[in-house]
Length: 396
Image (cartoon, rainbow, N blue to C red; front, side, top):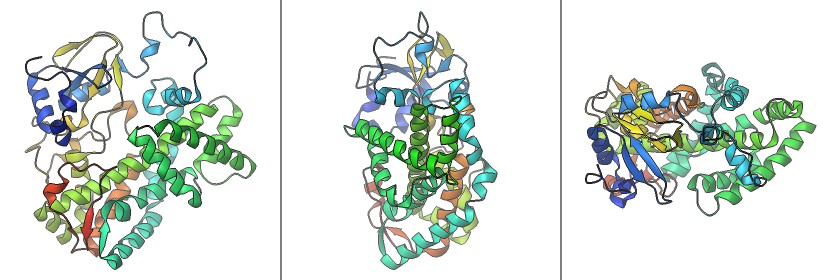
């Protein structure tokens, strides 16, 4: 295997521009492929659809490795920093029973029925954005179309006042970029949430923060660090991934004229566009870090205990054993529902219904009201498109 794969090949600039040939080779290898990240951490890449599914529900692959190391969970030699405490309580980094408890506190607000009640409001906001784009004539598909709906919808659900949303958006971008400003953004958001929670205790509102503050005050299900971590995750994940989904849906349609024409001919295909975008280029390349909690036989090989496991959703969603012509963007494909862009099992994306609704409405409205929409750059210039760095220049 060492002769076939560079030890850090996944970080090669050419692979970063298009990692799918790498994942094709991983699947063909017939066993997990060892890589070492820039920090020197070993991890094993798995890219087959069946193997990723098996790993997502495997009881010996989890997040909280400290619970399973020899000797069990040990007390920290010193008090954890506020940043470390918040990061350690992120829902996507927890296993049961804490994961089950925290997810249960917020899951009711993201059911299909709860989300459906938002459709009129989302439709109204989308219509306003599309009308503005038509007036402008030349727009950035991210800032003017993809970004505002997810940002405002999740902020409204959670309870971030409208006047504070631009500041929150800046914090969110810093946190997702995971650069030098990420830690400061997390702490600033924590301080802001402390203040907002105090206001909601004094004057409750019809939002998720008010509900969670009530639970926190009971002291039996939620503490302050969990509250900050949970709200931060909902806000960041609830917008960033959907902005990516909408932006890439628009980009892929306009780069495939025959698919764009089919949607214009029948805007009811918008839901199919969303699903194929999720399969072809979903928001998450590799699921959040997981570890082998013991020696695990998986994907034709053995992963040593306590090593990191990298489950590639992008690789799984281009598996030719599951999808016909997997590297072709086709909104008519019959096998699209087998994609696992939202994950699987207990960590299946909490906001999947909301992301689908927001994206479907935007794609539908664009087809109906902006039929002459086109890329203002050569599609080849967007091959390495990076949501959080690049614009999507469009002409109406």
